[in-house]
Image 1 (tube, rainbow, N blue to C red):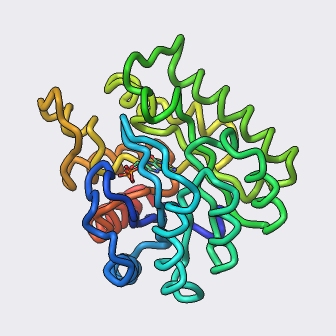
Image 2 (cartoon, rainbow, N blue to C red):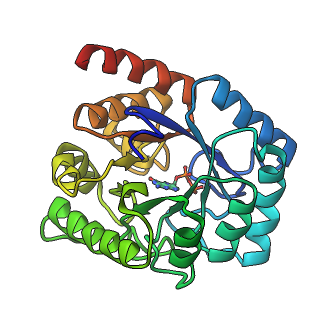
Length: 268
Ligand code: HH2
């Protein structure tokens, strides 16, 4: 994993969902989505993450058929051309995506929702991202609670990492993600970035998704904010980079690539 995507690497986000956090509905047309993905790679993305199910707070699950209908036309257009990941918790979506040459499966449920997904990843030899989430998207922001957020998230990810390895996924193909905004208050999110060393102690690269998330709007005083600016996203990404994060899941690719290049040059 560390050789395939060197630190720092940027993962661009292409959401094929009508109800996403920050860019909902704008990319539903597969040609426009494919063009956006290509532009992201031109701007320096090392990977483009295609997703057909929104996981924003309050989001309802989508059916298998609907998710396939959203993502397959985009993957078909980009197959063999761009480095791709699939943001899904469904084994069948992952299986079909892998047939189009997708390299990484990004499961926000960390192999907890579809019992067949671990086998699909193991058999294909794909890379895997395991993310922490407390609760489920529909209800996760109602009352998130932790004893010690960094230790609790690390313990969860350690258990999911063991599960994935036991299911046959090579450990060196797995990265871990604290799941910013997934069942967490602003204070929890900030502490997770501040104490990223606790996750890094698990020995795997860390991926973070801070981009345009509501915590950034809240930092700037918008108590009811549901999104954050590109500038605030870049600032948070740099803070995470300095604490050891490797891969950055972002909407504003060029801004992140340039800022991370500058930060990496300083710390080299
Ligand atoms: N965040 C979102 C979706 N997928 N995957 C990983 N690994 N890490 C994240 O932080 C993450 C993720 C949610 O963000 P967004 O894509 O903006 O919204 P939506 O899920 O509504 O499409």
